[in-house]
Length: 381
Image 1 (cartoon, rainbow, N blue to C red):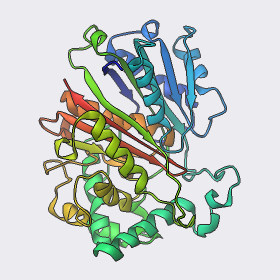
Image 2 (tube, rainbow, N blue to C red):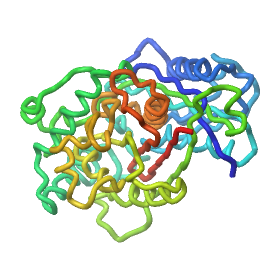
Image 3 (cartoon, rainbow, N blue to C red):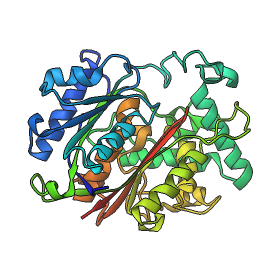
């Protein structure tokens, strides 16, 4: 396997674009990534396009109709919330294998105000339908119950979960790509309408539209395009191992723990080496659980990390300096590539007012219940 570098990234501001099509949104991000890399489509040898809601609509081919049909292979990817990050992994392996020298990954989605499953659910399976056997909507209920279980085991409080939202809202104030750039106080978060306790409205990610793109190439070729190549130290994808667990309580922890173990082994690094993390905070409860799942703190210590400001910019290990899904937004297919873009900007020192100073190693994490988990470990070279 060859070393692979990211040489270009691009992202549009997440929001709502009812006047645009998915390929138009994706094309904007792709052109930004090409400009960032200092290349055109003639240099790209393969493209992986991630989109969930239009997974049967040949989105990748429609993007190239806008930015240049060069006849290259296109892989259209659908993998729950990990759709975009799985597309990135496909581009990474295309280059790492030696089959191609330059590949592009694009993640895109147009959700508007639809829920996380868009009302369609998982092919009619009652365990994964919008209501399902959970009775109150799959995603809010799963992450609400997971938070309650953490409270039961470790004494975590609703206020600690709410502080995650306050932190991420504050970070988003310096992110021009964020869907929301509004600072919200702790009392406002706690007093907002309850969606699935302990998560209130401000502790749930918004839905919307967005796109992001990343261009990877072999490390030996990277210097042709950039003076700041970012090495992909690990690109990992896992799914749930079989257990006899109750289907009414999907496991959101094992996926990430297994992926983190493999990622650290592949990268030859550990959680102590990370300078920043962009993780899947679809709900405030999820962020706290993933501190422990990713090994950036011990079991039951996540609530205290938030209290101490350890995961804020300027703290020991900044998490979701972008504002996270809670503020940046969560257009499903775009999220995984957007997380990669954010880490790249920090490692290059290009993140503006939210810059994590001196960042050399970053981790991008996405989990898709259904199930899929991706982790990308990126390293400044």
